[in-house]
Amino acid sequence: MHWLGLLFLSVFSFVVVQPLPFASDVKDALLSDQHISSMPYNEDQIEATELITKYGYPVEEHFVTTKDGYILRLHRIPPIRKGIAPCNRTIFLMHGLLMSSADWVLLGPEKAFAYYLADLGYDVWMGNARGNTQSKNHTKLNPHHSKFWKFSWHEIGTIDLPTMIDYVLIQTKQKALYHVGHSQGTTTFYVMCSEFPSYNKKIIAHYSLAPIAYMKHAFSPILRVSSKFVHSLEFMSAIFGVDQVLPHNALMTLIGNQYCHAQEFSEIICKDSLFLICGFDQAEFNDTLLPTFMGHTPAGASSRQMFHYAQLIDSGRFRQYDHGLDNIVHYGPAHALAPPSYDLKKVKAPVYLYYSRNDWLSNEKDVIRLCNELGNCKDKVLVAENLFNHVDYLWGINAKQLIYTVVTDDIINHLPENEHHEAYDETDTDEYQK
Ligand SMILES: *[C@@H]1O[C@H](CO)[C@@H](O)[C@H](O)[C@H]1NC(C)=O
Ligand SMILES: *[C@@H]1O[C@H](CO)[C@@H](O)[C@H](O)[C@H]1NC(C)=O
Ligand SMILES: *[C@@H]1O[C@H](CO)[C@@H](O)[C@H](O)[C@H]1NC(C)=O
Image: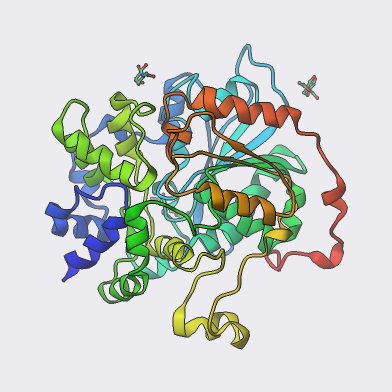
C-alpha cells in the first residue's frame, strides 16, 4: 500500500507522471539519501554556490541555526565585484514551495534575478527554508526520521524567516532590508509579520511575486481535486510515514535527465505536469533549460506544507494548520473547531504585489482581497503578459523585462516611510525572542 500514499502525494508535486513506475525506488529515495553516492555524476546537480562562481560572481555561504535546531543555509552575492558600484541596498530573496536559493540563479547571468540585482550593486542574500535540499540538517534530528518533518510553512514563517533576517541584519550592520518572496516565500512573509509584528520595522519594503495567502480561487485542477482529499491524505501519510515530499536527489535528477530532455516525447509529459500545476505557458519556457530546472526542482518539502496549502484551498481562509481533533491541544478551546486566522492587518511593512492572469495558483481575485486586507498594501501590479504563469517569475525567458526591471523600479521609487517603524512600543516584543 505504500505506493498508494506516494501516488497521492506525488499528485501534488511538479513531476506528477514520472515517479509512478518507480514507486519502490521513490520510496527508497524518500527514505534514504544513500542513492546519491551510487548515482552517476550529473552536472546539472551542482550546488547553487558552484552555479554562482561558475559565472564569475563572488559568492558566500552562511549557516544559521534556528532555536529549534534546524541548520539553514544562506547564499550571498556581496557587492564587491570590480566595476560594480554598490548601491547600498541589502535585499533578501525567499524561494517558493519545492524550490531553493538555486532558483534565483538558474536563468543564468544577466537574466536571473539574483545576477541582475548583483549587477546593479545590490547586496543579495538568498534564504533556504528548513527541509529543502540546501537546508536539510539539524543539530539533533535526522532527516530520515519523521520528527524532522513535523513542520509546515507556519514554522518557516515564524522561525526560519526571522532567524535568517536577523542574521543578515547583523552581518550587514543594517536596521532593515528589502525583501522579495516568490509564492511560498510571500506566504512566509505574511506569516512572520502578522505573528511577530515587530519584524515589520526590519523590512523597508516587501515585494511579493505570485502572492499566496488566500487560495479560494486557485484554478489548478490537480490541486483543487487533491484539496478535497486533504484529510485522507493526511491520514495516509500518518499511517505510511511519508513525511517529506519529493526531496531533490539523484533519482529526481536522473529522471529529469532521462525523461525531461528537450526534443523528446517525454519532455511533453514532463513539462505538462508542471504546467498542469502552474498554468500553461510554452512561450516563456526555455526548453534548453528544462534539465537544469528539473535538476534543482523539486527541492523537497514536508508533506505538512502541502496539506497546509490544500487546507487554504479547501477553507478559502488564510489560517494556521488545521490539526482536526487536536486543534484544541494546539490552539486552545476557543479554536477547537477551526485554527486561528493570520491577522493580515498586522502586516504593516509596505507591500507590493505582482500577479498574472495565467497563474493557476495565485489568482487575481485572491490577490485583490489580500491587498485589501494587508496593513499597508502599496500597489498591486498585473504582469504585462497574459500568459505569464506561476514559475515564469523565476524561469520565464522574459522574466527580466516583465518583472525584475519592474520590481527594481518600484524599489528605487519607493519612498522610505518611518511611520510604521514607530508604530510599535516596547510592550509589543516578540514571543519569538523569548
Ligand atoms: C554607498 O555608500 C558609500 C559609503 O558610505 C558611499 O560612498 C556611496 O556614495 C554610496 N552609494 C550610493 C549609491 O548611495
Ligand atoms: C550537519 O550539521 C552538523 C552539525 O553542525 C555537521 O557536523 C554536519 O557536517 C552537517 N551535515 C551536513 C550533511 O551538512
Ligand atoms: C535558453 O537557454 C539557453 C541556455 O542558457 C540560452 O543559451 C538561450 O539563449 C535561452 N533561450 C532564450 C530564448 O532565452
